[in-house]
Length: 127
Image (cartoon, rainbow, N blue to C red; front, side, top):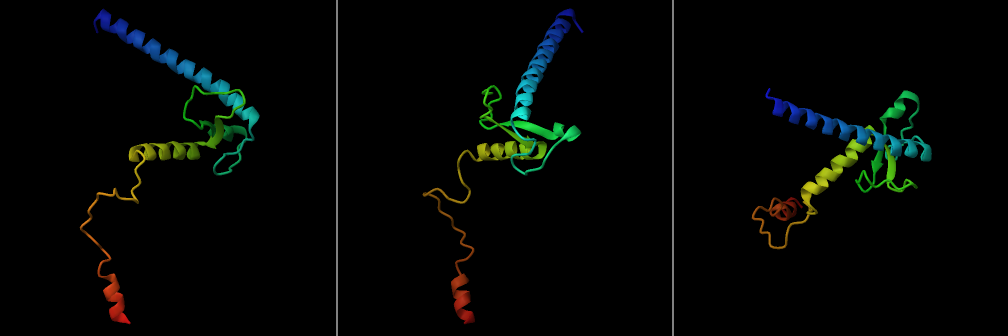
């Protein structure tokens, strides 16, 4: 590997390492505060945590902004790792639909297939 590429790679590795360290430090601070403020119970499923299992309890930011850490903890809730993953998965699905509901069709839609069109006639014929 040429010297310039190695230097660039070393700098990039250092930047990534610094970013990870900063994230861990920030996370440790608000996690410790949240664990002191709230009971060690998942806010969704109600499962209680203690001892080694406490590591499965995570801090969820209600507004999804990890930099918004008010001292009163109003942007946090404790969730188990499973409920936390579910919460973020729901957000991804909602963003994918971008506010459009699959249950309502746009007013200018013209559906040609009508699966229950003959149902009334079939029901009347059986009586």
